[in-house]
Amino acid sequence: MTDNLFTALPLPAALVANLESLDYRQMTPVQQQSLPLILEGHDLIAKAKTGSGKTAAFAIGLISKLVLKQYAPQALVLCPTRELGAQVATEIRRLVRYQPNIKVLTLCGGQPIGPQIGSLEHGAHILVGTPGRLIDHLSRQTLSLNHIKTLVLDEADRMLDMGFHDDIEKIIRNIRGKRQTLLFSATYPPGIRKLSADFQKNPVEVNVESVLTGNKVRQLCFEVDEASRSDALIRLLEHFHPASTVIFCNTKQICRDVHDLLLNQKFSALALHGDLDQSERNQILVQFSNKSCSILVATDVAARGLDIKDLQAVINYNLFPKPDVYIHRIGRTGRAEKEGLAISLYRKKEAHKLKAIAELQGFHPELKTMASLPELPATSIVPPMVTLCISGGKKQKIRPGDILGAITGEAGLPGSCVGQIDIFDFHSYVAIERQFADKVLERLTNGRIKGRSLKVRTIH
Image (cartoon, rainbow, N blue to C red; front, side):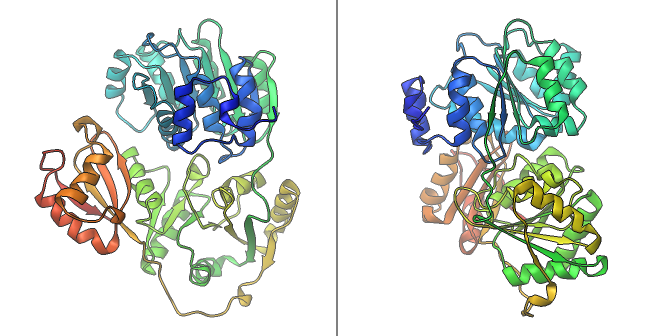
């Protein structure tokens, strides 16, 4: 297919118009290669990195097959983590907003199961979930997959790494009738081949090369010994001074230690790891994505599925044994044709890991020494935004426009001071330019949002 415009596809005019409103006009390579096959009904194995546009590829495909009058799950997207599940569900909701009657339901762990059971009783068209929570619903008989027409295994290699093969098999055994199975994976380990052979029929393969290139992401590797690792991290942050950075650590304990180190050095930092509940994760990701926090220290639970716009730098505090994890980590930066920076700390005896990385991506990162960095005065990065939390959300029918109107109308402040607005079930978050934060907090505390007096507080 030579035409890379969405208008070249057999899609409803309203869907195409919505894509244009989202600035989706030209297809990415994975969309251009896979969407025609998906729309024709083929099973698919697609090798594509995070950030390649794969979510829109399978979402547009499954949307086109929905029967709106049938309030039963017709499409199921399986994801390895809650974070990816939430992101995928959000993207699908954006894509289906042209048709207000399409219901997308997220079934992930870390959240109470009761409300999910209630939502299932009212019906849904599209399910996005993690294997463990899907198994839980099936065992309780609160979920029927008898009408599933499209099954998507997103980040399939990650799900296999996490030991979900048996759960995936149990879920698929509960799907009755003919289905289309779409498998998206960043790598092709042997388990992917077996997964495909077990659950797909004559799949067509699509292989899209990584969008990561040496020209877009500058990769620097600094040799350190264990005793100097933390000091090296501080010096690197002070030298490169990135406005937004994700620091990857191999374990939860290292993640906590690095977070404490940064806070002691007066950096704006938050930590993301597996011991947090869903509300804590949501709040942390909101603060980082809306530029209220400069540094996110994370374990590899955040290596895939996080779509942080304009991320300037990724730092590997530890190198991971598998070279493909390095690729996934640094793929967070240098997106949408922008330049990015990837910095890694390694010990001399880890040189073989750098060799494996070079072989995988086809070129070698630059090797540097800490001695090459000039001494600079100690500095910290002050985030440009402050996040306010409002005690009202979707359940109270709060919309972004209501919050924006309360700030620019009743509070009388310029709309330009308002950044990202995120609405959850019972809370909403709004990013405000730092210089206006106190004034907005005061006005909203003493004012009303959609005719209601709601509690508003600053979160740190």
